[in-house]
Image 1: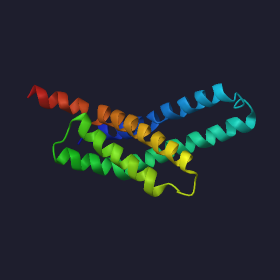
Image 2: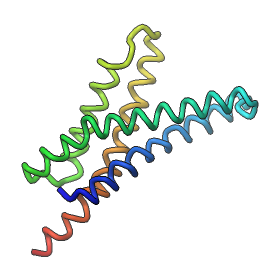
Image 3: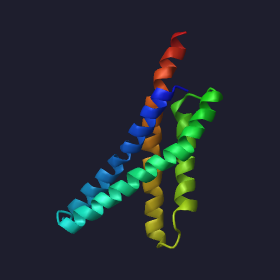
Image 4: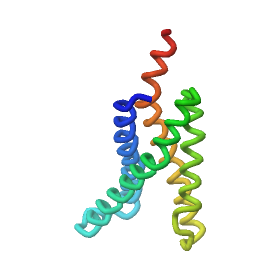
Length: 139
């Protein structure tokens, strides 16, 4: 586990969650078109900050320790990281998020977190593990 590549992976993977937010922004823009107001932009900025900071916190609190364990066990395949990352996303979505929201909204939230977990885990693996796989394969 290289500290420099892990730090780079934490930052880039957390910022990759912006892809989901951008997709949600574009989808809502086509549906309603009223995000161009000042109130809509303030709400969107607050949502983006909350979503990215949550992503960063989950990567630091759960992802980095899991990366440490996986690297000690010499698990370096993308699918192995995806299993762990999607499991963390599912656990976060079902057990940590408030459950007093309507079922349809909770189901949508679950899928948003699963897709975000897939993207964040893939970017994390690409930055933290993939460069080291090339070195291992050349030996």
